[in-house]
Amino acid sequence: MSIPSDEAVAWFFMGEGCATLGCSRRKETRGLMSILGYRISPRVAVGNTDLALLEPIKGWLKAKNIHFNFCATKTRKSTHRKMFYLKIDEAENASKFLKTIFPYLLGRKRLVCELMLECLPKCMRANWSSLMRNKVIRNKDTGRILGVNWDAEKERKRFLELMKYQDKITQLNGKRAKYNYAFFAKLWGMENV
Image (cartoon, rainbow, N blue to C red; front, side, top):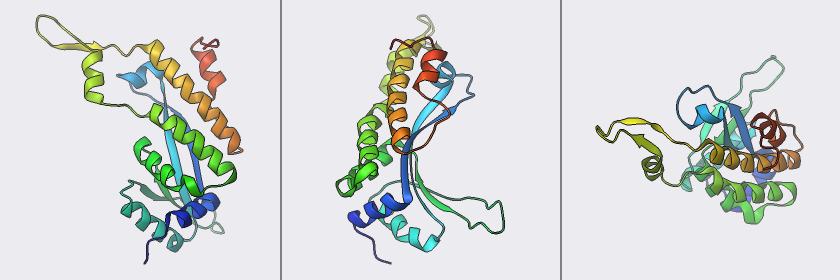
């Protein structure tokens, strides 16, 4: 099996792939997710019913050192064929994938990819250890960690900024999302942000 060119992967992605920002409800009781209650993350996928067509793409992803997950859908009816997916869910890997194929994309996929590349750096956290060092609240006498100051207002503004991108990308993809910017702006009383 030979590894396809970047251009070949881009063309395959234009026909069989998708890129979006996904938003999901979270049930964590501690940390940042408990403050926001929701999580936004990149979702890049290439899918097909023919597993053999995805094998060269898997080889290409491995050669480029892009981490991905492989999954298959369950068929609901005996007449349906099983769908196979290569999913890239981490912001760094999604960014690496999209930067590599971007020069070869056309049309709506190029516009979606452009928006994704613009917003992905905002999804990524720089350095968690330094971030936590600045946000941790400690007991001055014992040094014991009492909690974390997440600055909910700042995190909500960041989240709303990402939701603006999600709305544009969803519209370009011709889809409807369960959650959108207006939902969160109303939920958090931040319509003027």
